[in-house]
Image (tube, rainbow, N blue to C red; front, side):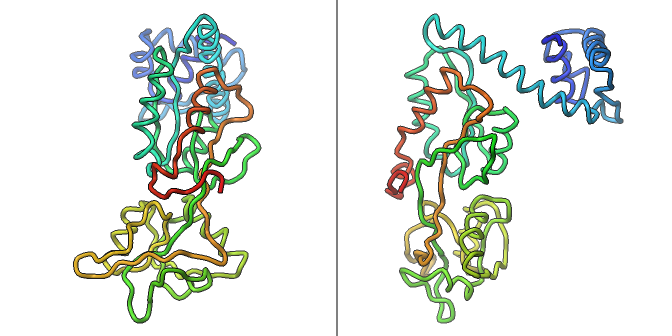
Length: 308
């Protein structure tokens, strides 16, 4: 299988257009068509089908696209590693970060990365943990920090830090918010929470379900800052990580309290994830070590201990 032909197919399949792929690659459309035709002859199957908007991969094409992305990434990594043997690591590394972590970690990460690897570049991809997990499996990113990801034989996880989930909102006579409450008491509250498969919702359900705790979820919103706005306006009580919750205070003349949850504690676990089936480049290995050095609890403002 010719790498140039494979690269042509991957670009066409991802962009859905021969015209756009030809522009990106700097080749003619007839050349792209010939590359794809030769691939189809080699594999004895059709890889693309025409649509009203361009082209899209067939089932065989989708399979080849998955392998093609991985093969091309390994090829780039091989070049980068061989060049690195002659001196400073080079190339481009993509790290996936959840928005809450990216907001506080990215400036420090980029600064330290540029100081250690002046010949390389870093790209930070922000997204929800579930989406970043899939991108890591597909080879679109090399490293990711994920909140409470589901197990996968394709991924290796290393816990970086854990923090408590809390309940917050405006206390009333019917729904007081003491400094501490038992997890069982959550059943009494109209709860605001992200929707499944959001990592926050997943960890809440995973901790409540074994104890028979059934939450009364009155609204599902994936953005934590929107959950907090709803809670502050009296629309319900948000379950969020402690680092995302403001301190108990008075807002617009109304009290806003934060309650710690216990028995059981609901812990949000941030892990460093890499792919088991793809060797890490020298640059990626160094970045893994760099991420592990960060005091994320301090950056998030929780003071949480690492691996606690």
